Image (cartoon, rainbow, N blue to C red):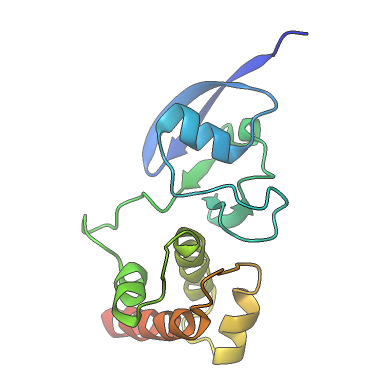
Length: 161
């Protein structure tokens, strides 16, 4: 049985790209094998941990479950997308300041989910943060620091606005 490939075209971190991909590949395989982007990591392979989070058209998806062919024509953002200033954005800076990571394996997913949360709700309560990020797991249990990072990022974004 031969593997069928499909050519897809999409925007990746602000740049128009194309790739020929096997039709069975997921989004993580596409990002890693065709674009050498390793921020989205496959961990549970069931869409339960958040380590593979990628934004497709501004919405978080589990890259381990999302077929690569489905990004044809889409806007895809990964943790590797630079901030508009070319440096770190407010969320990334807040995670560093709060120590919202330990091993870093889950951090890209938490950062992307935090960006999406703050885009939707610029002033989330602690309970809203916990609920919104409940699909992301941290094996090092840095949850208090992650919540603090989200709160810092929210304040920084509001101060900038």
